Length: 213
Image (cartoon, rainbow, N blue to C red; front, top):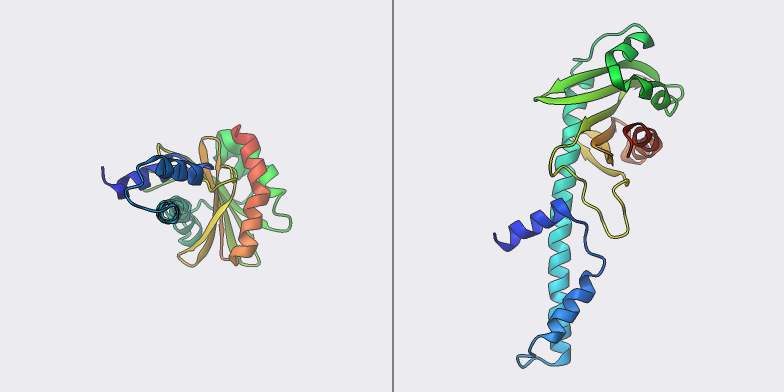
């Protein structure tokens, strides 16, 4: 396994160690000087630290993009392409959600004034989703959940836990995602990112509560 592969694996499995800099410094300072002055060893330490952090941040960004794409796929397929089931009442949505029906009203409470379009379970590219679609002045907003598979974990930055919301723009849509127990959860819309992310932050405690996160 080369250096690049080791960095990728580190991002998938662990947050950036809080004591990374201290560990690098200790290791280098305890090694033979090899003719380097104190300043030379310090420069080597800083260079290695910058390299490790830069590589980790790069792969973290790649991992976040990959995980956000999972939610965006369902939003495009169901909401944008109109593949969602047409429902005429909230009762139909509750029935379609099955075991997830208890989450519907608490989630709707976080979107006052928005209309419920559809609440259902669906499968896209072989992956099962729970999908609630709302409408705000003609624009569709998706609240999506899907069970995460092995390795599908949002990387954590220093001092930030798994509950944090990650965001990006994909395919012209604002996508915000977070971990919720055994699930990946998303809020996706055509809103600007600075308006979409607060929606995800509002709905996150609800989804985490109902998934036992």
